[in-house]
Image (cartoon, rainbow over the protein chains, first blue to last red):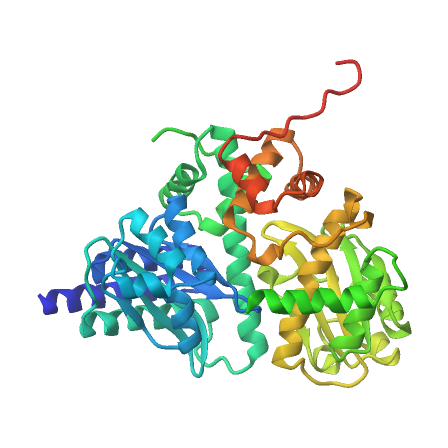
Length: 242
Length: 239
């Protein structure tokens, strides 16, 4: 069992490394990474949150764009495992968010997670040396912790995400880091705007618009961020239909 | 906490006013000079790939530099920002080859470091906030973090000046744009299609609507995304 996880992990690293070529699309890369988190780490949803310059955690990629799940990632700016993980720089593993202790610690987040049907909630820090730049958030429907081998795998995936975002393996200056984080966060905003444009044109929800956007990007080998820009400018025509 | 930095920067800007005048970009530039450890600050509006126009500047140095950016068409404010990250140049002379027109003139005018921040939200790009220093040296991490909040507020002021709400009593930036929820950006995209306008215009309208309704921007955006609220083009003359 452990061997197959290792094998799949190795394949994922090869796949992600292949993506990290010159001119790669960061949003597509992070999207793939969160999808692989779900498969490899055997969780039900994964989201990657980056801290902006004010320390606000903002979602940059998620395995599901379902609005209510996205909300669950985001409310952790007020309270929740992600915020604690971001502040402490340590993984936060909550086997059962429905337990009294978790509910007492994060009343609002615990209630929202419960309502969404999630029990296991975990956060892994995204580090750049002594600085925490974001967190990987994992949700499980069944009450369950993360065993140490899975935490190691998740940490490795998060490190790959850091490399993808910062582009350089030896970033020294805080200025460069701040610039790259801004860039990643702004790319995410372009995608949200394109979701809105497409949702209105095709009379679908933003969640459905994202599915169409991503499918088109893959089918046409068109980078997601660039495609989003084309949708906004009206130079890419994406048809509806599910 | 995240909100504290925004509240602090907003208080600095509010305190830089002369009396009770509304907060403006000029006031923001003055506060930036006072609190960010720089010698000049300026905001330039971008209304096309190559057209930029100085809007406001604080201090003689920045006024001259904004003019130089405009006349040479070079420099960090004029260059298309790759991927929208800030352009931080702690030593201007190190980039002389890149901007042969701008750098010598800027150095002659007394600038040795330039930090330029795009005023943008996703695909919306309305201008640049530029900070100048008479001596070379980087922004410290806290100054950089504060500068990004100044940038966020400058973006909001610029958007809200086109709908006129920034001059009204009780105006303050609605929310930090950079920590707005995804719905705000989705709603912006939807409204741009509903009205047949640019994303920038759509965001201006959304913000003006929220201000007039006295409601949080997130709530109004949620109504748009949930299709409880639509922005319809106003009937033109004769219709």
